[in-house]
Length: 345
Image (cartoon, rainbow, N blue to C red; front, top):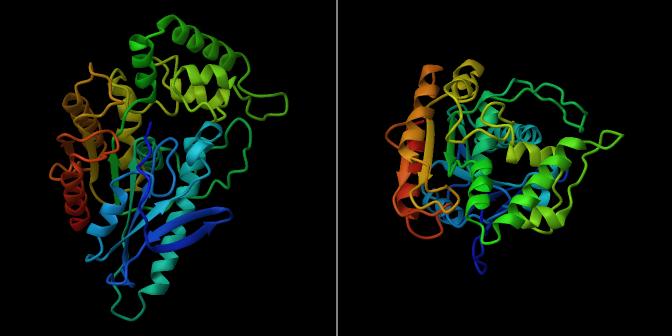
């Protein structure tokens, strides 16, 4: 889940086409070093696009006098495209961007004494699902039930990974079912959607079947965003916690075995060259009140380290006062933690 930043701001930079019809915005300024060797690639959450997360511009400003460039990534799933995409497709496109940035920086930072460029990927909200999926899923990804045009590239190793506001879409939906003013209407819409999605996840020719948008809007999803049966089942994961879907990575009721298969697989895949950083928001409006954030993060930490990857205890943690996308309170703390993590890579 994600919310949109306020309008009225402007940013200078370079818009790169890293793959056909896909772009990444690199923040630049007249005073910054144009030959920065290191890169942080930022991935937003559901409905996010370029510069829609409030703290990103301030993070770019904080990085101006460092050796790190900030790239804000546009995916096929950005804005209202999330409902017909998938984590598989996201990480394929992130892989292409990582390859592109590696080549870009190799060309920019020339000379015999050039510093070996590092690349870190940071995800906000559902972007955190992308980061974890990138790190733990098979490499290359296995072929889906229907070929959706993916290239199945081998994902390159990255030097750092940050997950910010990693919340469960399933638990957001369950919380809405409990707290809705028109509870019967919301519950009825949810049950209809689950039944429809399980009955017809695909059309006869293997294309995604789109669910009725009047029903998805009742659940609080964007009323103008098409949502496929396949992606709805992945986000809502109605058979969890016994049989969690691809998108159900952060729910508080997932078993230790499931965490071993996700967080615990990061070390096995060998795609992360350093520690893992996880940053949660103390006042995250999308995190149900019954969830103990500290206890949940401790479970993630245990699974990660049991799999052979160190958890960055210095930078990771709960950001005091922060909302889901850290609109105001907590921005300085969040950015300081990110800078501390990057400086340690």
